[in-house]
Amino acid sequence: MPKKTTTILSHFSKNYDTFLSDLKRRIREAQTKAALSVNRELLLLYWHIGKQILQQQAEEGWGAKVIERLSLDLCREFPEMKGFSQRNLKYMRAFAEEYRDEQFVQEVLAQITWYHNITLLDKVENFGEREWYVYKTIENGWSRNILVHQIESGLYERSGKAITNFSQTLPSPQSELAQQLLKDPYTFDFLSLSEQAMERDLEKALREHLTEFLLELGVGFAFVGNQFHLEVGEQDFYLDLLFYHIRLHCYVAIELKMTEFQPEFAGKMNFYLSAIDEQLRTENDEPTIGMILCKSKNKLVVEYALRDVKKPIGVSSYRLTSSLPKNLKGNLPTMKQLETEFIKKTVLKK
Image 1 (cartoon, rainbow, N blue to C red):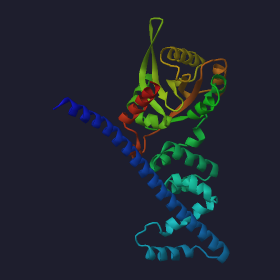
Image 2: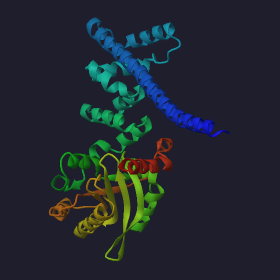
Image 3: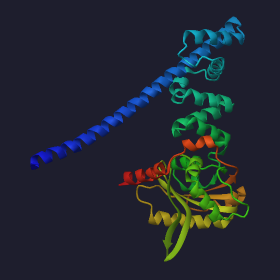
Image 4: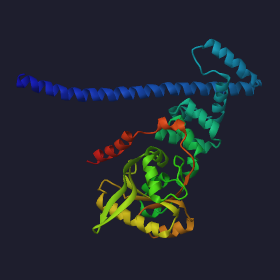
């Protein structure tokens, strides 16, 4: 093949790959927008139906029987639509009763599915808490099953409750973001450990159930390694678990303790953070954060232990229960997806 023809084909191939990649991205964006648009229209329709039912019941004195009649008439008129059962009409009425602001429905609630909204109506009574779960679902892209799991695990009550020194060691708003990152307690309901289990057993179990562990940690954690080797002064040290948080742009070091918190744990973690900041952190990274997960803790002891420590450290407890619900297994990220999180971070830094 002539050299000129080869050059043209090579140039075409390079341009075509870029062209195709751009088209794929645009098509995916259009698909997402179309799906969101359809969902928004459906949510608004359901909200308006619920609002009309409420108004007619208030103004005309119609009782609950009207929903039965309305369901029959709408199903007869629109047989291809499956959303007009008596049960769903009652949810529409409850939906409109709980959310009076149409703009909030259109701009916020319409970003999650009707089934997400039904779940929140069923399982969360407090409006402020329900709103918190709505925004977290949007932010993290939770499926309905994962949303159920987060509600049942009491995520709202646990988020941001770890004892930390972040306000003294991290600048704002990094300190506020990092505080919300940590929970207390952490729920390792996917593990079964004996009473005689050691810290190494816990670390090994969490590593073997890494996807479930990352679900509990929250979105943004990329796994770097376990028993992560650090060499200081020609001596070898091994950190239990090391992660990188994509949104906070920092390493997160985790030490696991099968006992109650002891003050010396803070000193050891401070040492690890200094080593990581010196050996791994770049100018693009924020200060490394330490997490000490203990079987239990005394709040005052932890506060004293962290008071004069210069590195950002948080202390939380954890609890072990039974097992992760089966319906979550298909919603968990794969190991390839977890590895991609860290690779993306590395590429972005270059």
